[in-house]
Length: 225
Picture 1 (cartoon, rainbow, N blue to C red):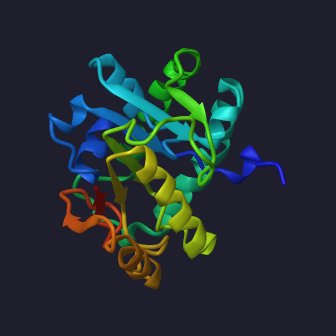
Picture 2: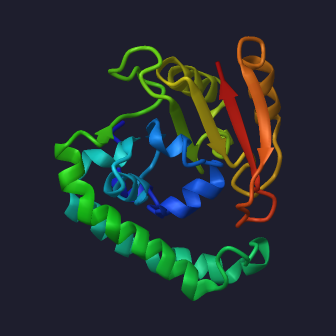
């Protein structure tokens, strides 16, 4: 079945949020980074402006700038209404209120859109679907990042998550996944089973971060060789 853009809820984050979510040091940010499921985040844009080395992978990069921009506008009102109805489930610390949230997200996505066509031409935004094999050799990237995708969508199943993370670990020396809860911010058997699988061959740790927006989603999974 073909992937449909109307099944996506694009909601982009910025570089400062990436730094907090993934505990990225200045040294980390000088390394070769892969972003999996980056969507309309402006991390790639902001990193490129400071001469960083980031390649972003996502299914939505098969679509045009116009199509993605249209989809962002389609979901904007719905997402903000859902946020308004569920404010009690969030921690209003890094982001103080709904207006700041909308401004932060829209600003990030506008920066992404301004960079998208140039970034695609430069090979920084790559259409790819996990767990398909990536066209890169072993350990090509220093760090692989996945935000609000892996471990969160438990319905994709254990095998999908293991296969996806295995491919990420083939091309990355280290991967970082945030958060480690499901869509309702609940702990699941999936995270325990994933850790049990990978700790046989890798160094696995869970790190508490300074970033917490949805209540309970302040932990980061790091797997390294």
